[in-house]
Image 1 (tube, rainbow, N blue to C red):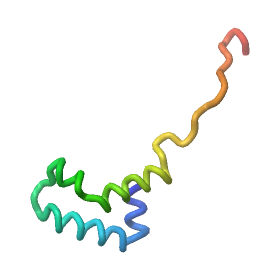
Image 2: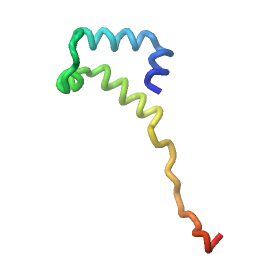
Image 3: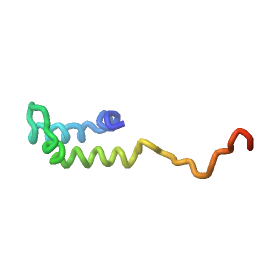
Image 4: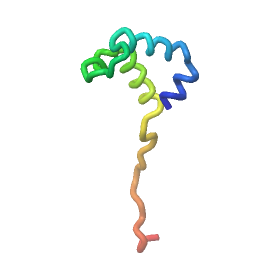
Length: 68
């Protein structure tokens, strides 16, 4: 979903790219680099807020085969 949102909002993609290039450049990012990419973390958190991996929780119980 994050890729879809980036395709929908090229301005956000550009801002993320600029942040990554400014902090990391062309090298492989370290954990500390990723931790410090604040706009990237905000983007990921917002995508997860809008589109959580689990979108529903079943409430109640299921009947066993003998009760059905």
